[in-house]
Image 1: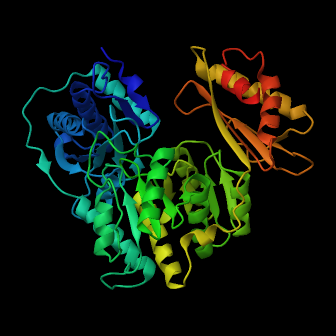
Image 2 (image 1 turned 120 degrees about the horizontal axis):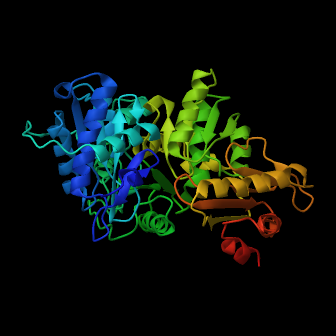
Image 3 (image 1 turned 45 degrees about the horizontal axis):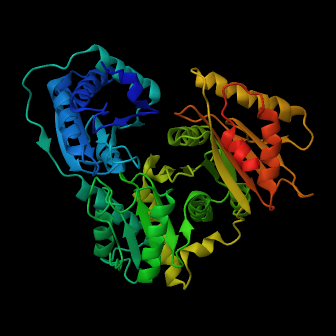
Length: 502
């Protein structure tokens, strides 16, 4: 029998869903659906017949059967179930807040940007996504409870995506302070949906007057035959960059499979993702809310921190994991700190104005509004990035942890580095070190012009190692010093670090 807890990936269910090694099967989805309703009933105090749950999916091949199985499990447990069919993760949450829908909870069948043989489940309440502890409780119920074998009321098919599309249209008109039918007339945008669930965004832009010639991979295809739908993937970004250049467009947009992440490219085909994307949306928000705090994950660059400061804001690094940065931004606001944005370098971006929902399409909509406004002034969106200092060198390595208790072994390695940095000359523990150990260096007689961050992966038995330098050869210098400290550390495979240094 499968260990249901092994399907847990942060706050989501995720696993292989096709082939001989499939673990997320129809039977498993059926049990998890029933368990979710049981847990939801206990949490809300409502009897199952009073509960309504909406469910949708992305374009993956296994999506229809897993959606049907999970929906049946929820219906067997007594809930009323709405089947939204093809949808996006942000839309599944927004349905809980939209008049005429407003179910008690929603479920999205997706594995985000992962390979086509994977799939998963994301769970939402009107207050936001469930946390890791709540997911563990649901999986425990699924493990210990057989699915109910009884007739149930029919599952109702409903369509929410057109409603969500209208909400995005309204954001464009509000942002441009107009009620004209075609507020994006004159803007040329290439959309790359990566054969995921986001192809409708191109249609929306056309309806708003934008020119979308050159858009690609709009048809849902769960095999992802053209490129991985991932805004961090080099091949995917190169594909949309070439499409923009070939079409002569003002900019291009790319989404992941379920559209909770996005990136853009400018008219010259230059990628605007990771630190550049954070800088761009930060500049837009800080222009409207001077002095605000921007929460990011821990691997953002020193150049980004300086950029945000130059725009009058405060850069606040926090732990990796999109729920971590969102929850911290919410906490800061509750403490009286003006914080309009939580964003990861992966492209997960949540705005306060949008219910703290990490929504790639909402993010690109905000960027398009600014692009249209700047075009009317004869400027380009990427002009806002002037002054962003890019590192001369950067690298990310992944050091495998071989111990069975990989978290303890990883923590021991981090403490080893922290202990050394406390007393070593030239090693400066970053003042905003909130995850793992981030060390700043003064290279070639400069000041604070290099750093590395060693941390424990959120999910895997790995120590990710990021390093950046503003001078040539600086990364090898810093990582050479780190290697000397880590030599002899137990249960850490230092091969990638040795290979890079030597």
